[in-house]
Image (cartoon, rainbow, N blue to C red; front, side, top):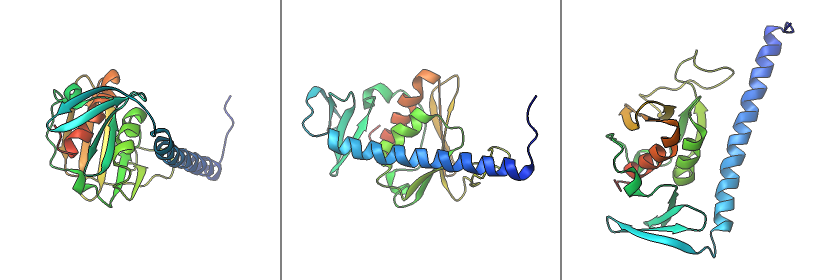
Length: 192
């Protein structure tokens, strides 16, 4: 039988869970950026492609790297691997500059990691949020597509990207979550 707990105990437990998840996400972002900065030096290139006047170099870390206006971007997939993913975005990298970037509670982690590795330096912060009060457990902020930049990454039967207001939906089969997230990065950078 389950132990009966009071409402205060449940709220305290939910708040603690939220804090732990937030700290883990923040730590992951900090360590991934720091690790990338230190690990990048001295790596050899394995392959090289040109795509729309940009050089994409596959390095030993298994990521495709390209430089745009002095910024290094690294993705698991090359633009050629993602150009058949349909979707129209009205936003571009400028839409995210200096603003918070929110991910919907329950979004797929591998997609979040791929996007934050590339645009984290341009946004003021990254945070999980709920789209309505009933969506999440715990003490998560509730945001909306009218005022906030929100990315929702979910599994679906087809792979596509769509935008409604400031919300971007990346929908993909489980095996294509990262490829869909890379397509989003390329689309906001106006590469594809």
